Length: 245
Image (cartoon, rainbow, N blue to C red; front, side, top):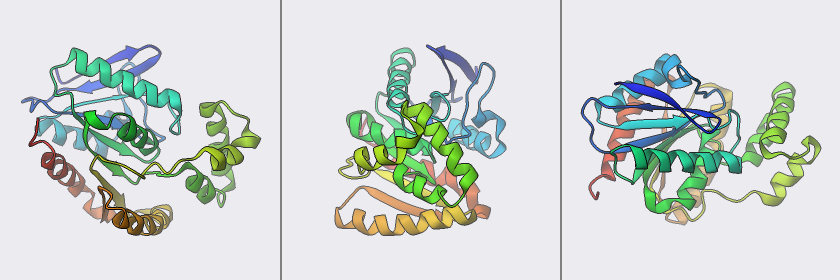
């Protein structure tokens, strides 16, 4: 069996099995287009994502992920559901309890919370074009009125707060999610489009801060025509942290 879809409470989840298991697992936390339903997922429907899944399976990884309530934007219930999925998989499948994480875009908001709250159970994490700060992302989107309004609506729904209070609430409660990390993190920034370049300026500023703090975060920039290198970047990075079981 290559893969199967199953439900945890209301949310559909998917697991992909390797032909020759290495014993290591990867939790994927997708971006805002990510979905899982009864039959498939964004990662099986998108050609680039599916080729990454196939490569990781060939390398012996068991890969799993959840729909996580759709556009969750790092909400508490998405974090709790990701933990529940981890517990379910490590209880029902034969994999090492210390896993890797791959998160993209919005998914990084959940991944960073897990890196703080489950640090003993995570070997390493790869973040692709991550959103590291909801406040910074919201400020960036202000330039695009349509997307800004849509984002406010999604944030209001996922955080269950009034749309008019969102910016104020974020300023008040946002934490620096990259501060004090113990788990090795590789950020892969694909330089496609204006938004990604703007984000890379933000990353460069943060990189200086991470260096000063001796943080375990490294950044790798890649051009769109070299995207096929991402899978080897990931596996090389993961393998560094598989020597101790």
